[in-house]
Amino acid sequence: MRVNVLLDIFLIGVGLYLTMTDPAAKTLGIILVLAGVTSRITGTVFSPTEPYDERQGTIKIRSGHIAYLVSIGYLFLILVLVNLSILQDIQFALLLALGGQVLFFPLILLYVNRKM
Image (cartoon, rainbow, N blue to C red; front, side, top):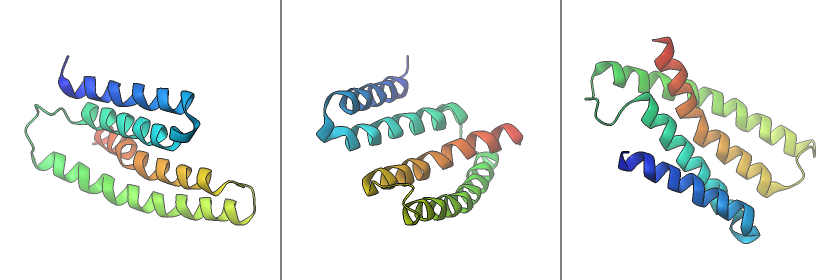
């Protein structure tokens, strides 16, 4: 196994452990899980051993633009839900916003890579 895969599994495992066992470290645990999942998806799309070429650059730029546009709408939706008092807990709303922002790019990267 490569070191990157082990580090991703370690981040996800420690994040899940912190989320389930320590209420004070729940936010940190969620951030670690998001980091591990993001790293794993990005590592799946482009292998670290694969040399960087023009196609990768094009895919990353297109994915970044799409993720940016989607994230603006997503943040607007979170703000509307907080304003309408559907989401009562501000910390949870911030975690949802952060989670969406962190996961949009690798998910769209996966989609654009499969499409091209």
